[in-house]
Amino acid sequence: MQYIETHAHMISRTTDDYQHMAMAGCACLTEPAFWAGWDRKSADSFEDYFRQLTEFEPARAAQYGIRHYTWLCLNPKEGEDRTLAREVVRRIPKFLDRPNVLGIGEIGMNRVTRNEVDTFLDHTELALEHQQLILIHTPHLEDKHKGTKVTIESLLRFPRLQPSRVLIDHAEEHTAGMILSEGFYTGLTLYPNTKVSLARAVDIVERYGPDRVCVNSACDWGPSVPLAVPQFMMEMRRRGHTPQTIRRIVFENPISFLSQSPHFQSPVPEEQSALVA
Amino acid sequence: MSVKCPMNTRQLVDEYFIENRTRLLDIAAFLDRLDRSNEDRQADDFRMRAFRQGLRELLSEEPGRIERVQMLLSDRTTELRERLDRKGAFGAYKPEGEAF
Image (cartoon, each protein chain N blue to C red):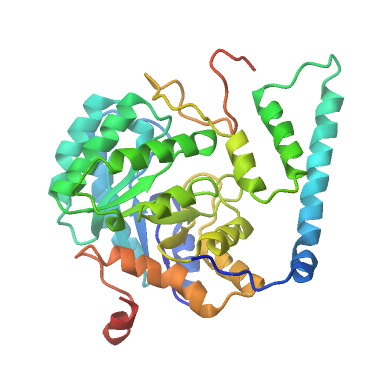
């Protein structure tokens, strides 16, 4: 079964991972801008990073038949530095016309500080001004509930914002309900230690239903599994769910969300994509 | 709209008992390990206090244990932080001024 990986930091993965994902049925993936594990010193570093995301990675993915898309931003872990954030936000628009750019992301909170909120609002304004989709990171562990709540409250203050053009990622049991009830898409991130296990992800789908729910590996330089989405598909089968339900979560829901960007090309044939829409 | 789990109770236990038995034993071993290391009987830090509260929650008969345990491990304050204190998370809420 084909699937779409909606969140993968491929610059920190090996080429073998691309090969394994292709062999497992990955048709395309989206790579949000994120934290390098250390704070960058200048906006020039981000420009180089955005070139990597829009030039080098699509070419690397294409060698394995995977279409590569990306999201641009200064990520939440660096959002405290308002001077740097303002400069990076100022430079992002010149990259938005590149063919694999879907929108602004992954933006959001880390420790839910005043500066992080202001940086998040700057990015949201930028996305709205340029009609971009938005991909949102929600904080880790003990900060997740508070950060998700502040994120949603902040978004709802933008009257122009359409919730269906925003995916709020890394949802868990205590945040999925508040995200979905406001009309946003959500992502369940399948991590071996933190975030959501395979069994718990299936539980969340059973509890809230498959509408506007996507799953992803968020594979990066930390403990993470590039094949987590196929593993989720196996867990759904183990639980007895139908191929139709599985396909909806790993393929059709991502297409419904991502197709709102004019840069996204659906991986299914045209005659079938009309049925999906 | 929710999706009904296709498995009945017996099937769920048949399928998931062994891996959850392993998790139960891992937690028991973890608590024994802490006891062995704690010769001067120091009090639990904020993480282990939340952990033991979570264990008590597991014995509840009320559905919604996962949400309640998640909230026991969460920062339930509502104010924004004035400035960044650290990048990472501990896994449980650390009250202001509390040391390890």
